[in-house]
Length: 301
Image 1 (cartoon, rainbow, N blue to C red):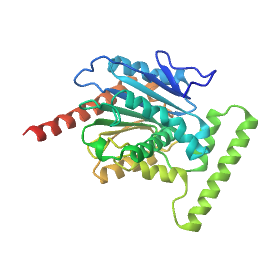
Image 2: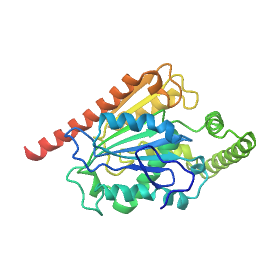
Image 3: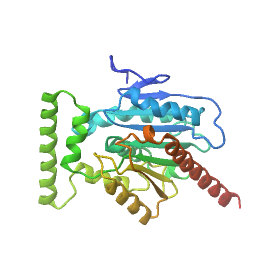
Image 4: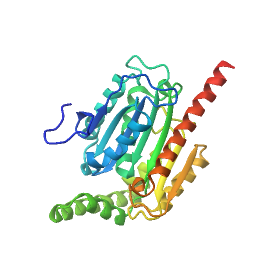
C-alpha cells in the first residue's frame, strides 16, 4: 500500500500504509532489548504527538525496530474489510522483520506492544483477529517474549466519553455535530440490538471482552506482563474502568500491574511524570525478559 499524499510520516520512519510508519533496524539487539516495538496511537494522535514516545523508545532500545499505527476516527464506522485492508501493512512489516511463520522467523522474537486509549486498543484487537485467522496462536505463542502496555485504557462505553473523545479530535463544529449524531445513533442501535437479542452488540463492550483474552495478540499469553497506566484526572476514561479491567485480568491468571497517576490528563502521563512513566515501562519489559529466562531454564533443566 502506498502512502496517501499529504499525510506526514514520523521523523526517521518510512510510511508503509495510511497512518502506518516503520523504523526498521537491522542492527543486533542487545540481550534485554525487544526486537520490535509496536505502538497503537490514540484517536487523532498526530506524528508530532507520537514522536514523544518513539524518540524515548529509540533512547531506551536503540536497536529495536518500531511500527507505529495512527488511529483515524473513521475506524469506528468503517466496514470490517476496509479496517483490515488498512492494517495489512503491519502484518507485512512483521513478516519482513522475521516475526511471523511465513518468513524465516527469528529464533526468539521479542515484541513490546504499547497501546493508547480505546482507539489504539480497537486497532490492536483487530490486528489480533487477523493474525489468529492467518496463523493461529499455536505457531506463535511458544517462541515469543512479549509485554503489553495500556496507556489510558481500556474504558467502557458511555455517551459522555464518546462526546469528549470525538469533540477533542474534530474541531469543525458542523462536522462534529454530524459525526456525534452518527455515533449516538450507532450507540442506541447497538444498545437496542443487545437488548433484543440478548447478546453483546456494542463495540466497546466487545472490545473489553477481547482485551481480557490473554492472547489478544497470538504471541501473547498468561505469561505476558501487562502494565495499565491511567489517571484519576482522566475525563475521557474513568480510572475505575481501567482498574476493573486490570483486576479481572489478574483473576484470570494474567500478570497485570497498575500505575495510577493523580494529576495527568488522558494520554498525557509522560508530560507530568516522565521518569515514573518510562521506569514503569522498563520494569515491565524486565519482567518479560525474566519470564523468557524462566522458560529457557525449564527447557534445559
